[in-house]
Length: 238
View (cartoon, rainbow, N blue to C red):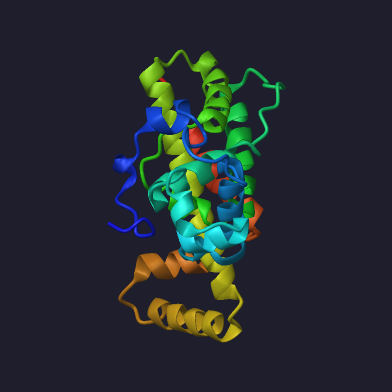
């Protein structure tokens, strides 16, 4: 695979990435750093999406040749690992847990949602298996502490956190797509007409009943909270 194409997250050696040196051991001291490269990649992704993040574009942002970046990030998958952990440093870890693990877990999910909305490329980046870097580990530690009152074992706590993060990522991806669709009034009106016609054809009585029921608040925040409550309140800790 080419560096920009990536070769899959499993090609990244986490020990070398997170515990190894952050700059090449040999050669002249570079005029840029791994931090600068990662920040430039994040800025590109925030502005233009993940497809815009190539080694060539990132190199141009830091004023370097693309080849000089490969010792820091030999492929795009490594760069994505760095980007995910970089922005994870923005996640707050407030020391104000209530002791009610469901309440605290919901608060964590709201932090994650706000974080992913600030970086709309994150849900897609998280779809591949990632090894938690130092910033990610800080937030993971925070989440595991919130789950301590459950009495779950360590593996189950990790599963709950993974389930929560997957839910938030999937919801935010859908939320972003819905917002883009809503920007096209003609498309929205056409979809409404279609569903009304389907509900009236007599072949979909369950759908017709569902569509005729009183609606819930449709603000993105209210919708997320409603779905989140169903998930967290239904978690089994036995």
